[in-house]
Length: 134
Image 1 (cartoon, rainbow, N blue to C red):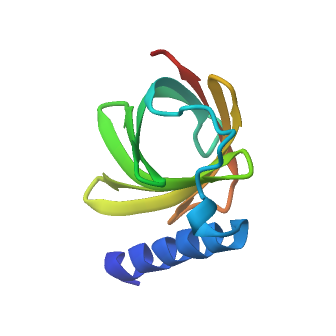
Image 2: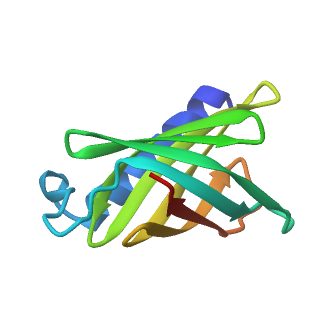
């Protein structure tokens, strides 16, 4: 399967996921705290190793643009908020291959508790916590 085909599958899943969550026009709920800012990121990789980095979240209309900086690499994604959850796609270039995935965060004030997975991947659902630093 080509990298372009894999990207198309993940983006299709992200769009379907957003549609399942509800009306895209209501993606940013009135009671959602402001999410734009910089966050400390701590998570678990496949196999159980830990990682740390930062995530910058910027609001663009009814969507959120996320940029992860982890171990010298950059991941970028786009997400929506619905029912107290920030749901985002993400993509990065790892060793010349495109890796994509999805992450779902529960919004808990200044902390976002997330679960994520990736394609290609092991089929694991992993964890990631974002804590606001500004």
